[in-house]
Length: 415
Picture 1 (tube, one colour):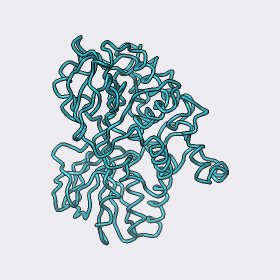
Picture 2: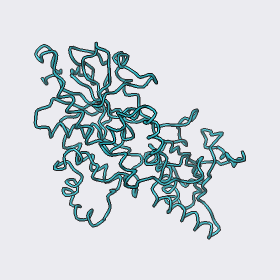
Picture 3: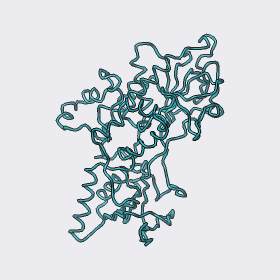
């Protein structure tokens, strides 16, 4: 029989994986368990393209900014995999995305004793000074919840995925079903869109790839040293304490560090491909700028409409891929009636304290913490890897500072 948990983590992506490591490394014993509906650890598996790299330094891994001496660092992973010297000689701060995913899986395996996979959480309710909830067939009791429910695919209004219409999150899961396509359409102007365009253009030598976006061209990400300070741990304090108007301005100023932008090297590579085809007189990489996709049908028929003059180009697509990003999943949706006790600001957004705890009414004594969904309070790193290691340390320390109201002996044990 396990005792009442100090914290229960809902969802087990990179954020709660980092928290599990912080629990493992903490000098005091922490009663924690994490619940994940997937059968195993997985992070954006559908976009683990062979040559795609991370857009964040390997030093912003699961632990280093919190504990540089951690045995869970990316460098320790490389040493164990026998690639440390090879990586150093590579002279890059940015690992392959597939490699970083393997690092996550390596770390997840080491903390597997804290995780229950293939489990859906439900029926959350207040119990004593914490919460009770169902996790599969078990009844679990925890003083604090840490919600890391991740992101949901964002699609334009009226668009539904199907046999020929995908979101980029499913690209590698679905692409094997495509045989000798003639036309592929990719909608979007960000990193995933550019990667998908390059992927289809290279994989299928006979395909015509249509990139469709409202901008005039792909825009480079601002990864300059000063702009990157928006991802610093200290920037969270600055953002949190700023007035609402300043918060909005900061997000506007620095949106091009993360949203709807593309690595410069990839932009240049795509431009080289377009130019080579123009020289050869046979173009199969068509980038439709200042345009949008309209009249989209389930069978792939659609039209590219110019935003400038309204002209339309009909396309009979074998595949339409929407690289239209993600939106935060509603973090309190799974809380049921408990979610009704979470306080909101004048804009209807969750009120969140500096330590990532949701403000609640007095009849919810337990702590509800968020990993993600806090961009409006904590800034641009809310759902990014950049500040994960530091954030989980702050959440764990906050959990352990909160005194228990009810003696453990009076609460039920985990069944």
